[in-house]
Amino acid sequence: MLIDGADATGTIGRVGYMLQKDLLLPWRTVLDNVILGMEIQGVPLRKARDRALPLLHRYGLSGFEYLYPNALSGGMRQRAALLRTLLFDTDVILLDEPFGALDAQTKLQMQEWLLGLWADFGKTVVFVTHDIEEAIYLSDEVHVMATRPGRIIESMPVPIARPRDRSATLTHEFMAIKQRCLALLMAGHGSALGEAA
Amino acid sequence: MAVQDTGVGLVRAPPAPDARPLRSVRRLPAQKDWPLLAILATQVGILVGLIALWQAAADRGWIDGFFWSKPSDVFATLIKFFAAGDAWTDIGFTFRSTIFGFFLGTTCGSLLGLSFWWSRNYAAVVQPYIICFEALPKLALAPLVILVFGIGLASKVAIATALTLVVSTLTTYAGVKALDSDGEKLFYSLGASRFQVFRKLVVPHCLPWIISVLRVNIGLALTGAIVGEFIASQHGLGRAILYAGNTYDIALVWVAVLVLSTLAMIMYAAVSWLERSLRKGIRQ
Image: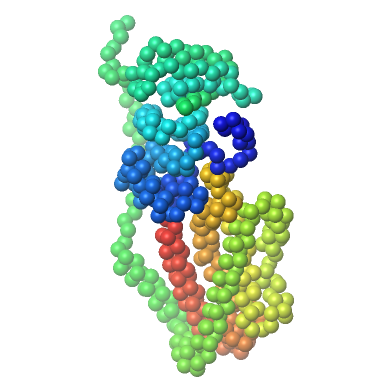
């Protein structure tokens, strides 16, 4: 595994990481969950909180800062989890099916939210998903993967201009990529992997 | 055949060919709650009734007053027991052995349970010993414990500790095993050290498990202390019961049991309160 050309296999703390499960700690408030990464890095609590609060306000979690995660909806919890990942300052973020457990409408909202966040932070996001439309809509480049053995069977750029909105999903270009992905997946029973840099 | 317009994408079920015969209906069982006062009055009534029945039975010779004693004798002995001055020494002795055993057993047990998180190999090696100690009837070792620790407070504390330690260890270990490995992965992905994972994830995660055994343990600790006193002791409610039984002072047996139950209830209530406030503290 290479990051910026250097071997990073087996090292920890190099990549922000988020799963379908939000893994928020039930005994911490949303704010204290979000600063977990900084806290582990040894940033003083007060400073970490001061840095996190404006972000919580900006990205749709105001009013929830001092609540415990069990009081939040699935979408809100994923937002908190993603902010925790972002605040842990790494260049690369790995999102492993982050919206897989959300309902269809919340998922669409979260995609818009993620695009906004990505534009602000400008990090490389490796986004694993089974949702082809999600992969194409969010990514600059889509890698289609097959299982047994896990491998990339085809990579394709997504030449749709940014910033994108939903109408992009109805264009001819979009449809063409989607069709190609579908054909690959049907043939190889693989899954889609998006990447935005 | 004409296609019917079914409104907003609904397909209607065809009408039933003929109405089914009416079934006999059963009502959902409903229970009306008594007011709290009525419940309390009934409880007190039953208690008073039982005591009155006991008194009457002993007075009229339906039961042998020598073996069963009777409430009036028990009450007289109760006053004598507290007036004589030994009562508080005994209560204090039993209370101290129970509390020391409770804290020692619960603390050591919880720490031992948590320590299993650090190494799976260590946990695998130690586990059979824990299970053996769990299976062992620890009260059977009481005479040995008295020989080793003497007839004072230490032996009672040791027995109470032995009874509570294993329960705490196994319950805490269950908490450790229930830990989501993805949670650990998340911490490591944030660059955490093992000690940070332990302090910020494992300990808070296991706290509800640790707390859940407190009430069980206070009862076990009291049992341990009493059994220790039964075998050899100079003080304590257990010794008072044994002494009263040996001298056929049945009223004193009842008095000691009564005091012991009161002590148990007070400690149980205190631990329940502790448990509630701890739970509130960690907001599980």
